[in-house]
Every structure is written in structure tokens, then in C-alpha cells.
Length: 353
Length: 256
Image 1 (cartoon, rainbow over the protein chains, first blue to last red):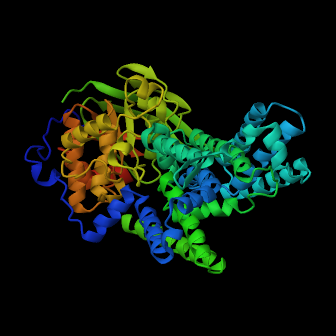
Image 2 (cartoon, each protein chain N blue to C red):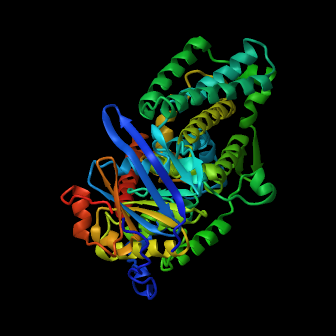
């Protein structure tokens, strides 16, 4: 057999010529797309700033005041918190339709544990958080291990949890007064700090802290980078040594935990425990995430963007209401924004490919 | 080049039902060589490669690394033994940066509390290491190590995939059709990278259908036919036409 051939092939010296990769010239549009790629929250921030400026100019100090602007934050607090959970799931190229139902049911669990079973409210809160996490974990198992499509899994979970919520609560609301008297900690996130005209509820502050924590996890830890990798291309991630199933499980369970937490914050926002609250939260969070520049195809986006997305919706509805417009204009404009945002994502992805 | 075998295999068999994918395959790879594996479609070369990279467990037969018998149960086990595989479709995450791709699944954390409790990644150290690796492979002109992989050309992406394989002290790198999707110029770049890696003492298994590329870089050519090794050719002493002849059965192989 032909062996031992110390024959030198095309010599590896003098390689500088072609081993160098040609520097690609970047046009302005290419540079812009590259920048948007690496800073996914920049466009939603620009839209948010522009909408605040426009409404500020049109409506004057009535809109452009610390009170109104912080009021917007209070109004988007619940959607903002749940949008953080939604972002995690969407980054893995999934979607979670059950977030609102899990949130409401968690708040009902917290209320019922305290008022029906007489547990200390602190324990009830822990049980509510555990309930939310468990719901998320069930979805996670079905998506990651049984490999069902996330849309179907969470569509089912939505119906199941929502129905369970009504059955378990017997469709009864726990009154705000009772909670304030017997278990004020349930309303903890309704308390506020006032600085001048600005009113920051604990819920708003919690939303900001939570966004900062999740942003840190996503951008500064291996787990976070793996979330993006799994959303980008799960097979590639697995071949590179990422435990994709583990990542999906933690994402769905984490999303459930955040929804449970949103349930607690919801009691603070409403004052009461109401099983009929939050019916549109799933759609509102998907809206915030999409407007916030996160791609529904996974692997691209940020929680900060989603927060901006939620705030854009909040600014629009507040501004248009103050301007005396029919509230339908808000929905119409948000609809336009969603399509523009998705179209833009499509453009960026195509330019990148 | 040395003739110490880095990796050998004897009598590998694998059946899929009645289909015999490997029919007693022998294989040997020497230190610091480029061994091309060629074979017609369906000859079972991809099953052999999967067995060597841990993607398939052979039904019988032995594999040795550095003279020790090893069991390669999965790709992780292969990696632990120093066997890295660059897949045909590259297995990169397009929207993540070059550094993040190179360190995917093997990220470095910061020291101290930041790393152990807060799990913070040491991005600077990873960027520097990734940069050094690319520079060694002649990929200097990549402007920004943090740029997303999808902004790179096909050849550059292949370079990143190979850099990832070479970056972790591996002994054997398996390249599955690394030039199949590339143009002429980019293919040359990748072949040069293959030579550079070989010159660092890493052994390379190159699967390719392109005879010019095989004859350009390979030190030896393993010809696979009908589920086993037909012969090993010295590219200096035979022509691409001969190799294709052996591979397809048009030429009868006469041992000795």
C-alpha cells in the first residue's frame, strides 16, 4: 500500500496572499443593520422617545409631566413584568399563550391560601410562586422533552389554567378592604414612593429590577447565551455542546415563576384578587415583545426592548386618551406598529442571511 | 511527518436492520497528517466518521486513541478525548458573535465571587483567546471578534468553525466536506487553514468529494468502498483518476 510520503504539497509558506480574508466594505445601510443587530433595543428606544416627544409637544405639560409619565409606567407594570417572561420564551423560538392565565391563577392561589385556608400570607405567596413555576415547568416538559409545538402546548395550558382558575376561585373576588386588613403584604407592590410629582409604585421598581436581573442573565452568563443559541438553531447549539432541553426547561419554568410573581404584583395593582383580571395579558405581552424588537423566530432580541415595547403601548394609549381620541385609534396604531416591527425584523434577517 | 498512529480502528461493524453500513472497517490516522477519506455515496464513509466522532456506536470492533482502547459513546465523549468535528452545515449560531460561537458550551467564567456566585462570563478573556486563535489561522482581517457570525462570508464562517475545533487542545479534527459550499477562492483559504492546523501537530480527517482539494492537502487517502477500507493511497504516487477508479470499482485494487 502506498505509504510514507513526506511529499510536500503546496507549500504553506507564502500563504499571506490568500489566507487573508478580504476586508468587506460596508455600505451605510449594511453598517446600520449591523448596528441594529448588535443593539436590538435601539429602535424601540427611538420610537419610545419620539412618541414621548410628539405627545409632549402636542399635549404640553399635561402629558410631559413626571406624574403622567410615571402613571404610564404604573399602567404598563403588569404587562412589562409578564413581557419579560414572554421574551425568554420567544427568544427560544417559542411562544407562551398561557402567561396571563398563569399570572391570574397564581394571584388567586395566593388569595385563596390566605383567606380560605388561613395560611400566613407569606407562605401563600411562596405557594403561588411555586404554582406559577410548576405550570411553566409542565409546558417546558411538553415542549423540551415530548417535543410538542410551544404554540399548541401553551394554547392548551392557557385554557386549562384559566378554567382551573375560575373553578378553583368559584369566580369570587377577594375584596381589597379585606386584603388590606388581614394580609397587607399581598398588596405590597401597590405601595409607592413619591418624588416631586413622580409616583413610583413598588411594582414599577420591581419591574425595572427584574428586567435588569434577566438582562444580566441573558447577556452575561453562559445560560443566557445558550438561550439565544437554542433559539437561533437548536441542533447547532446541541452539536456545540449546549444542553438544549435543559435550557428550554429552565426558560419555561423561569417564565412561570415570573408570571407567578406578576400575580403577586397584580394584587398590588388591583388591590383585590380578581379571577377575571388579565384576560388580554398574553396578547399584550406578545405585542410588547414584538414592538420591542425581539424576533418571533428566536435568537434575537432583549428584555430591555420588550420593556420599551410595553412603554410604547402605554405612551400611545395615554397620549391618545389625553388628546380625546377614540381609544380604537390606540389599537389601530398598535396594530400598525406590530406589522412594521415584524416587517423590520424580516428585513434585518434577510439582510443578514 | 511522524508515523505514530493517533487513532486506529479495527473491524468496525454496524448494521441498520439488513443494511450493512460498516463491514469490518479498519482505519488508522497518524500524528500530524491530513488523511482524506473518500468513497462513493453509500459506501459507508459517513457511518465511519460518525463512529469516530461519537454520533454512532458501532456494533462491534475497537477504536484506540494513542494506543489505548476507547469507547466513544457520544459527541461529548469524543470531545473529551480530543476529537472535534466540524459539521458540513457548520453548526454555528448565526446571530451570536464569533467569540460566543467559538466558546459555545465551554464558556469561561470570571474568577472569584463574580464567576462562582453571579456566574459572570469573562468576555474579555474569551475575546482575547478567540482573537489569538483566529490570528494563528490567518483570519486576522475579521474586523471585530464580537460581530455576529451571520455577517461573515462563507469562508470566514468555515474558518470560525475550524477555529472552534482547533481552539481546545484537540488531537484530531474531523472536517466533513469543508469546501462543498464554497467558491474557488474561499476553498483555497480553507485548505490553507487545514495545512496550518496540521502544521501545529493536529491530525485531520478530511471528508471530501472534491478530488483536486483532496490531492491538494492530503498526506494519505483512505479509499472507502462497500462498507470497508479498500486501500490507502499516496497522493504523490497516483492520480485523481486512479483514486476515483478505486472508489467506484472501475479499477480493481491489487494489494502489494
